[in-house]
Image (cartoon, rainbow, N blue to C red; front, side, top):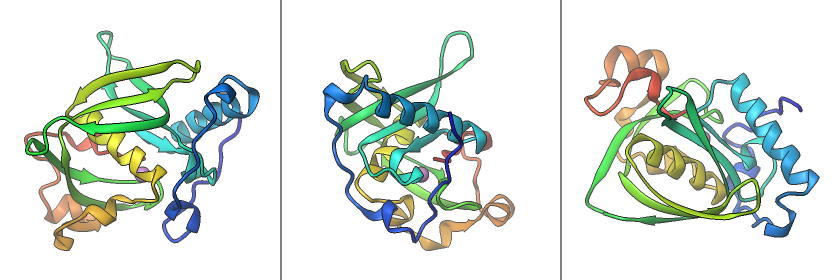
Length: 186
Ligand code: NI
């Protein structure tokens, strides 16, 4: 296990389209090590998700959280070669997003609130599920990383892009649909 260095905005690894992972290699040592290192790195920086290119590995693998199970534990999904289908384009959810590759910043982004996801999981099994609300936003943020997209690319009103402290002081970072500690940082 290892805590990996997180690439910051400006590093070209964050701007490339990542390579698909051969599903037959998912259970092999390289992919399994990458999954463990992503979890350890995400935990170190208190992220709610993390994508492989953020640790300088341009492959289509990410971890996304934001879901809490019945016992109050955070549930993280490991997604390999994920594909997202928007279920309702008109149903949108906005929030101040953050990202470990843009430390200390927050920006208002609106995304589809309900999606369907197909992917492979860490056992090499094909999975699909529907998701809505905060965890759906987290998954979209992480999957964007796999296409070289950062949340800043999706900010429409640049007056709603700020340093964390100023965002908390001057912008309405705690709306009805979210809580302050739930802003995605991945
Ligand atoms: Ni991110």
